[in-house]
Length: 295
Image (tube, rainbow, N blue to C red; front, side, top):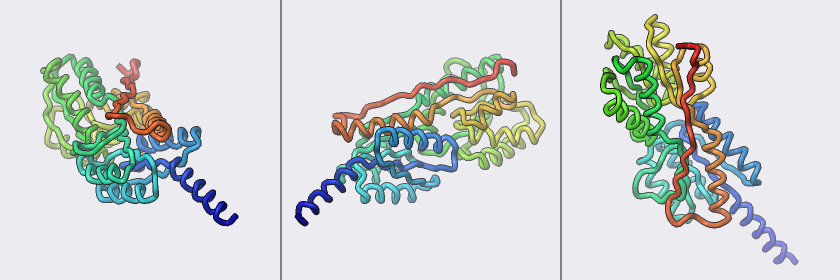
């Protein structure tokens, strides 16, 4: 009887492990990723899955340790929102070697690692949306500043690609007079924009790769008393409120909660059917949030 009970306990433990998903988030200091986590948690609750969440605090080394820890804790599927798309490759390869399927969410994982699903917004299209809006607002001409996200992150590359390709091909009258990283951070957006305002006497618009940087830039601009159009990316609550108050021009709306929930749904599919034969790309829709009465 004791042996039977022990075996039964092992079966229950194995079943519980099989239903556990890991989620390694780049940072929970950003409200966008808080929404992503909350969407993932809600879907996990709905599906009866256990979700283990770690916060890398924008540190590559912390995230690598988090991923290793989640694999050692026996997660059957790992969802990764990379701090740096290339730097996490070795950790993802190690997870692959341990038999753990990996899902990339919002940001991709660099070459060399196997990813079962890549779930993200159309960042290239979103960058183009921002450029088109600025082009329309400035009648096709004017000096523009671009605040870039964390170097090496796929969202930074793709949003910049969409923005700059549109400017080059469809609105060459826009001149990028300054381009600098502020690492997706509001405080850095503020300080970087303060320096750019001193260096650049003529600026008509700013495109920031996320709303946190846009809001920091907006604070610097408002303190300077200058009239500059600001466009962000993510449609966080603070940014949407700034758009509605006619302080910000627009923000590209992502659906972070949907990104999180779809990542967990994909993880559940892997648990049920196993990983797909090749990477499945899932694009989550986006749109531009503006306030027409402001213009």
